[in-house]
Structures are given as C-alpha cells and as structure tokens.
Amino acid sequence: MSVAGIDRVFERRLAALVNSGERGVLRGGRKGIEKESLRVTPQGRIAPTPHPAALGSALTNGHITTDYSEALLELITPAFTETWQLLQCLVDLHEFVYKHIGDELVWATSMPCALDGDASIPIAEYGRSNIGRMKHVYRRGLGLRYGRVMQAIAGVHFNYSFPERFWPVLQEAWQSRTGGQDFVDEAYFALLRNFRRHGWLILYLFGASPAVCRSFFKGRPMAKGLEELDPHTLYGPYATSLRMSDLGYRNSSQADFSVSVNSLDDYTRDLESLVFTRSPDYARFGVVVDGEWRQLNDSVLQIENEYYSFIRPKRTARSGERPTRALRRAGVEYVELRSLDVSAFDPVGVNQNKMRFLEAFAALCVLKDSPPIQRSEEHPLDGNHVRVAREGRRPGLALDLDARPQPLAAWAAQLLDEMRGLCEILDEGDPARPYAAALEAQRLKLDDVELTASARMLRELRESGESFFRFALRMSAGHKQYFLDLHPPNPETMASFAEEAAESLEAQRRIESADRMSFEEFVAAWYQR
Image 1 (cartoon, rainbow, N blue to C red):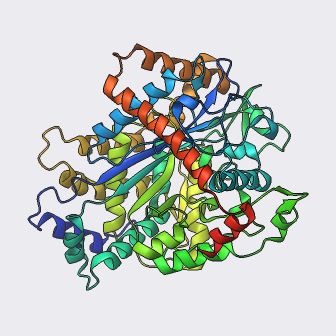
Image 2 (cartoon, rainbow, N blue to C red):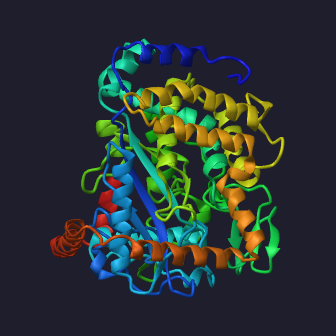
Image 3 (spheres, helix red, strand yellow):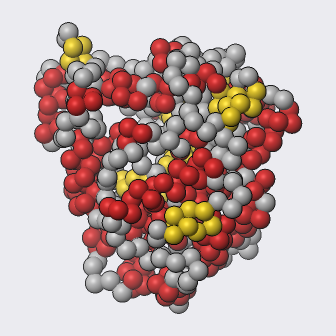
C-alpha cells in the first residue's frame, strides 16, 4: 500500500460503478444512530435518579435505553435511507427525553461531567428477570475490570448498510465469483480491514474530546501526556479524541487482544476464543462470591461486546442469541462505526455532514484494495488510531504505513481525493450536491487544523476562560433550551414514543413472569447456545 502511488484496484472498481448504468447505485443505504449521553443534575453532577419510568423500560424499549450506567442514556434510531430523516428522529427523541427528565440535563460531551470516583456512577438496572440480571452483572464485571469511570464516557455509533442494488454491481466491479450473502460478508470484511487502515481519519476530522475534567482521574494516576489548562481541566495539546485514546476505550487492558477481520470465520473464532479463555487477572475478582455475582465469568471477555473495536460487523440477533452466533447464522447485515465523539457543537451530538461523510467513507473502504491484515500489522495500524487520538493536530505528524513514516496530511489528502467520485455518485440527481459539500467541509480541515472540532473546543476554553466542566455545563444547558424553544413537538410522534414506553414496561413484566430457570442455569445456557 502506497500513498504516493495510485490505487489501481480502487480506480477500476469506481469506474465500474460509474459505467454500470445504475444511476445512484449508492443511494438508499440504510443508516441509524446510537447516541449515548449522561443525565446530569443542573449543577453538572451525574444524576442519582433511576431511569425515568416515563421513558419506558431500559430492558425492552427499542429507542430509549441505558448503556453502562443508570444515568447513561442511549437513544437508538431506526434505520433511514435519508440523513435528514435520521436527524429529525434524533431531534424527536431528544424532545421526548426532555419532557420527562425534569430539571436534569443531557451532558453535551463525550468526556463525563464532574465525578466523585467509581462509587458515584450507578450501574444500570434492568429488573429482576434473568436477562435483566445478566445485563446488570455484566456491567458489574466491566466496573471491576476497567473501572466505572471509563464506562461513563459517551459516544455516537453510526450504523450503516449498503442498498441491496449495490451488491450485484459491486460483485461485477470486484470481478468476484462469490455471490449472495457470502459475497456480502466478504465485502463488509474488506470494509472492516480498510477502516482499520484508514479510520484514524475520522478521529482527525471529527474528534471532539481533547480535554477532560480533572475529576476523571480522582483516585487514580493522571494519564501521561496531558497538560493543565486550568486547575480543573486537563488536555492534550494536539489531542483530537481522548475518548478513543489509551485513556479511554483503547485502554491497556485490551491492547494485546488480537481479533482478525480477514474473514467472518476468523472474526467469530477469535472473539469466541476470548469469551472462553480464562484470565488469571479477572479470576482474582471471583465470579460468585458469598452468593453475589461479581461478573459473568472470569474469561478474557465476558461477552463479545466487551471487545472495544473502532468498527463492528453486526447482525440483528434473535432472542437469547449471542452476536457471533447471529453472524454465523446469517452473515453481516450492517456495520457499526464507533469512532464519533458526542459533539458539544451539535444539539443532538452529530450532524448531517458527518453522517454523509461516513456514508461515503464506508463506500471508499469497500472499494479500495483490501488485502488480508497480518498479525504483525495489527499493532501498527491500531497504533495509528491512538496516535491521532492523542496528537492528531501535531504539525508534521507521521503515521505508520507499511513500516514507513507517512505524513498524516498527505495520506488524508489522498483519501479525500479518492472520495470525490463516490460523493458524485451519492449526489446523483440532487442539485444541492450535499455529499460533495460534506466532503469539501472536511477538506478545509486539512488546510486549516483550527477548523477541527477539537481545536475549536480548546480555542473556546482559552478565549472564555472556562474550565472544561463549565464549558460542557453551559453547552448542555444551551442544548436543553434549544429543544424547549423549538416549535411544539409533533403530538403524534410524542404519543407514539409514550405508547412504546408503556408497552416496554409491560413487556418487561411479561419477561419477568415467564422466567422458569435459575439465574445460574440461565447464564450457563447462554454460553452453551
């Protein structure tokens, strides 16, 4: 792979798409968002209140749930074919949430509010059913293994699947003899490999967590490489996304994991191996101690989703089905891009330009040449992500490309150049050319690093004299006022959310009354499935 050279494979495949006769062959891909945010008090402390019953059951509500903490909201949209529909759904969900959280706020950034150590973060509760208890015990295990504070970090996940009419055209462009779901799986794993190679670009362009409240480190050593902006704020001078760095999701506990994305078989094999391989470090916590469950098992991973990757292949699972089993049963349905920070500069944490860019970037990753990644390549590739997260705005920063230093700016420029033709295909029939406009907005960030969200946040902190905490609290209050000042919410939409919330509470009661086995039997059966 050479940035200086031309990717002939990509050029040939792009030409095949253009010449296919399928107008807008990339239009109509399905996209959804999962957006996490802490509920906080008006003073900026993590909310001690239970998940509001008016929002429904965190166990069974498909649109409003919780992640690690009882206070960590997760809003999940359906899949849409247009980004404006997706954005409108996020607006509607936020309006519904604000109707039912009283004077509380939804925290506006990925890095959390003022914390008072692990004990200040309540673990999410999901009721007394076996599956509800399992979700809670899993989170207890995460707290023991990595600390609760890390679990209070929030992110935005972009779910994407290509339109069905794209696959036969891509198969022809690839000149592949594989067909059907086998080809779809092959293509999605090519995307996964190229995201591992090039996904650092997302952190440079959209990283929005260069600073953190000093309370994040209460009771534990401060991370190396951070400087003091003020007595209450620590920051990385060139950081883009501390969330995606080694002090966030890419923590040292998982730095040596090796999960191949060379094929669906390799991926599921490696993940399942980690779920069934005992860890001496985690065994010291115990699994059941004095009758109390501390974690689901003492393996390297309790379940597959404990593995923190930048991107995941996904398949909607059946009830009680493990993620790897779902993938083996029916193949990849969509991918989950997990690198986006919650943006303080967008009331819903994300905007249409980002989503359009990610859609085009996914197309780039599936069209570019994507040879298998050798084990020896994994650490350097993942290291590029961490380096950009920690110091992506450093002038002259070089990344590892085929064991040679490659300037980030040159590599990024080539990727954006290659995306131009893809954005033209995505803009087919739309005179506004929104995908080209989204691409151009990112190109400007290569010319002027001060246009990145991470630089903008640090500039605002310096100019205002605010601490990170005060800045995030002000933005959170401003977002709440923004939603309160909007035109009255659509009454039909609000009624639909309320009905779903009520139905989810009843669904949880049905699940709880239907349990017929002990929790121990349930957990054992889960791993045997």
